[in-house]
Length: 199
Image 1: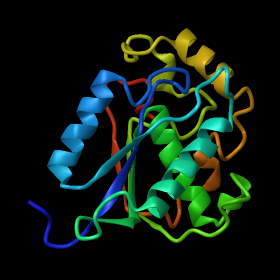
Image 2: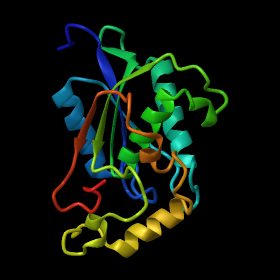
Image 3: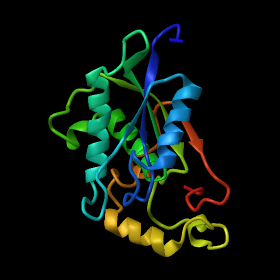
Image 4: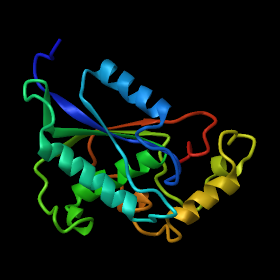
């Protein structure tokens, strides 16, 4: 049953430490289907280039292009979805991309990602960051404590980060550096035993 008025479009970015997973990963496909059903919004699940073959900032550029093209393409019937109103959702590395994009769009710096995209005709109306990574230095207690961080080994996390972005002082890598003021309404979901929960 169509909604009574057009709903925003959800743009989802998967996690995987910037080095693994894709839109075809089974659990992400299932998650996006459930998200669409629960929210009654159209969901666009987006891929981005992975490190180490495509290091930073390739993922950020791909993510912005995906949002821009989703808003421009009008994939969905106008009575069902308003693609100029975007909800950004991501987990892990995808949560990082969500936070980076929101701050860049807020500050009018999208042209630094791709000079073809200097005017935004869409609005980010909400962002959902699911155990996302907001800064990559210094390592937080939850990342350093092997007892608490049962789902991530520190050595693996360090390898992923080095493969993606050896220099983590760029705001497009560590969005915390851009400041968290004047961002869209935000939902942050943390997990008790996740190594990123302090971030």
